[in-house]
Image (cartoon, rainbow, N blue to C red; front, side):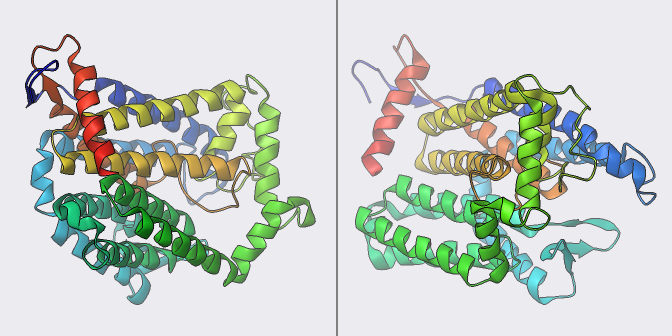
Length: 399
């Protein structure tokens, strides 16, 4: 490419340090809030043996996740492309194993974990998010214009996405299935899907979601509780009411770090899925806005990386990871703030949890790796803006 922008070249440089900063701050907030939200449970339960039980586990998972992030950030992302098919096959086997073998481990009314003997259980649905997006980025980038063909593009895509999301839904894990489906659909649209097929698929997807909710009694009950939690304040409405009390009690500046009252067995999952409510109670509206700002910064940097990636595979991979993490964060916050009906899903980099933490940090490593291979232009006064303009035009041309 020549002209005003000069020659378009791919240059390997430093990773996106602003993205890394946003993730690092979220990790620090998460470690602090996990300890604050969990020490009551850890102190009162002799099985845990220490007030710092969950804090120590969180630090261990963060350390493992940082190692995964370093590995993915250092190894050229094109190498992972060659492994997309075998990794996807392994994940499908693990998702089936959770449901059909004795390795499946049940907790909180769901069978989402694999027991690995003395090792902590793992949650294959978390690994499925990154494996599927890696596979789809590779698959979609190879389709070219034939992606618009119904039999060559839309039907195979829908079959793969539906298989993975369906296996996760059977666990049951509606939140993760929704994140997987939404991220995959957005990636399909970005890659250049036929608009007619896209909207037809969206209508079918919404219908499937409604069927999944209404066909199982407890999900319908959750919708009823979401619409009017006061109808069952000591049952299905309890989680919503206690989250609202926590957020409302915090006011503008919060009660102070460690001063939450709802974590004293009022708020279910205070250190896991409901941790955003504890942030609101202890750090107030300013604390919640700070977390939302970090997520917005992560989204902004992720899409900048998408626009400056040197190839379509890199663009789709970066976009898929950004969609996934941002959608998951927004759904978690929407549930806690009673904007969406209750579904259990962790807040990335903040909630207590092993599989989610390790996989999310590994995905950030991939995103950082793509950022190191950004496109720049010779003879351009502002290289980053020039690269973004050209890449944006290319992506918009695929819509």
